[in-house]
Length: 162
Image 1 (cartoon, rainbow, N blue to C red):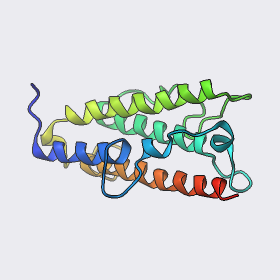
Image 2 (image 1 turned 60 degrees about the vertical axis):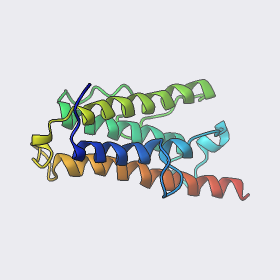
Image 3 (image 1 turned 120 degrees about the vertical axis):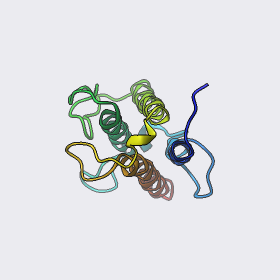
C-alpha cells in the first residue's frame, strides 16, 4: 500500500471535494454537470460567452496542464483543439457530450494519481516556467473546478428560470 503524507492526503481531499465528493460548500464540478440536456449544454448567456460544454472542456484542459506540470510531458498532447476552450463538433450530440465528459473525468483521475504519487519533498518547490509552487498549483486546480462549478450552476439557473 502506498504511504501518503498528511499534506498529500489533504491536497487529495480538497481536489476530490471540488470535483466529485461531498463537501460543505455545495455542488462540486461533477455534480454541476449531471443530467444536462443538449440545449442547456449549448446555451450562451450572451453573445459569444462560453457555454457549459465549452467550460467543461476548459476544465479538462487545465487538469491536463497541471498534470503536465507535475509529471512532465510535451505541450500539445491534449486531444481536443484548440487546446483551451476547444471547438465543439459542428452538429453536437449527447454522444459527443458523453465523450467529452469522459475526457474531463479521465484527466481528473490521471491528475489525482499524479498528486497521490507526487514527492512530498517537492511540494513547496516552484517548477520551471511557473510563478507558484506545486502545492499552490494543486489547490489552484481545485479552486478552478469550484469556480466553474459555480459558474455552471448560475448558467443553469438562468436557463431554467425562463
